[in-house]
Image (cartoon, rainbow, N blue to C red; front, side, top):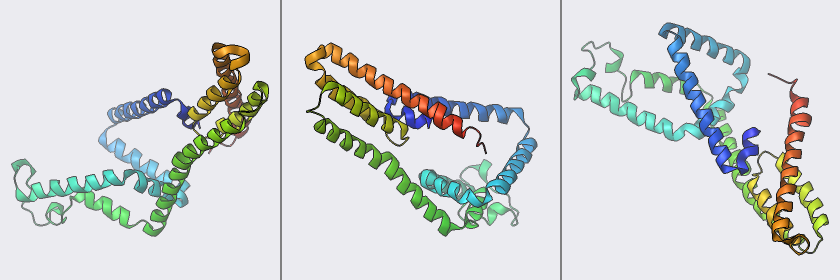
Amino acid sequence: WASASFSGTIAVGTSLAAMTLASLVASAIMLSASFSKDQVKYNKEAILERVRAKYGDNLDYVRGLFIVTMSPFLILYLLLSMINQLVRRVGVNPCSRPSSNPQDPDQTAGIFTVRTRKHLAKIKRWDRANVFTIAVYWGIGYMVLQVLCAQLTIVFLSWIIERTAKFGLYTVTGIMMVIGLVMFLLPPVPGLPVYFAFGIVLSAQGNESLGWAGSVCYATGASLIVKMCAGAIQQKIIGQSLSQYVA
């Protein structure tokens, strides 16, 4: 919800995403340095077991999201695994030659390495029909929330600008504040077009009575009030009411 609220502020959203990614990387490095290899393996198994026990029925949604977001990286991973296995078999690099034991998994792993083969075996155990169906729904949801909502918001606000051109300043201010409040409360709706609409409509309506400088300050103050009210509603009415429902 916080990330969606920041979507209209490009610089803040980019900084928030960079900070989050850096925090995840730093946490992963700290955890890997704090535990031995056996401890990491044991903890990983325990965490995966708890996740399967608690969310086993909903893991297909995560797998579908993985297919949608990570497919290019998965293809790249398979290509690198093929190159790795080819280098091992050809013997270009003496350090990467497999052992002469015919029972060695590297000798019978096909075109992929042993680790990649294990990963593919896990994927084959998925309910792939359900996973790919959910992946399609994830894609549709992304198109609706990130593409259609953003474009329709611009079209809707353009229509509002045209329809309110004949009204007075305070009437237009009331209409824009109600519409802006509703749109700020919707996470898929970007905030930047709302700010633009406030600046265009209120500045044009208040030009005669307030002047350009006064109308710009008026539009800025009105949009700030609406944003603060939306934030208060999100925190106190929505957030506080749902705070007791913690998984």
